[in-house]
Amino acid sequence: IEETSAADSWVQPCDTHCPRSPYYCLQCCQAHQYNGGAAACHGGRCMCRI
Image (cartoon, rainbow, N blue to C red; front, side, top):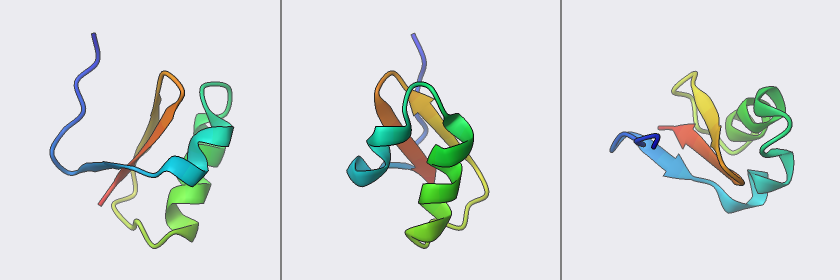
């Protein structure tokens, strides 16, 4: 079971990239002004680092 940290925010519009394309999940996060430099697919959810 993967844990998401408190600094990670679920960005629903970016879910289209998950779970197949974590790189584009990250790109989508950056496009939404999440500048933490980290993003990951947690199942079908794209989680962005704030």
